[in-house]
Length: 156
Image (tube, rainbow, N blue to C red; front, side):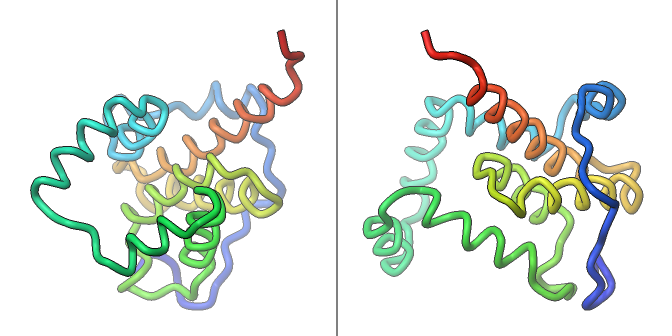
């Protein structure tokens, strides 16, 4: 069990400023960091996708949902938020899975994202100090910061 059942984690309002990111670095190697790199470099993802398709096929229902979704955000964000906000149970709250979901959530900034990532970062850092699980929420926060920065920069 990752968190006690029905307990909401709260590490106060997020303050993801430069001092926070300077003080809290990523691990050199971690699964969340690999996933993040693949998301930023789609060419790598295509190679992995081709190899994976040779091994297995997507389920028909999953394929239908993907093909009928109007965009990636409407397909993925509700599933991520639903999973991260579910009551805490041993079956669905594995630190590794949550860490990877946090990476993905960083690409879809909304009102809930930053606070949820902030709380999970601090929780993972305290609960699993010798593991890389905190990299997922940290990468999500980094991605939100970068996307917000891009929005404020003037277009050329």
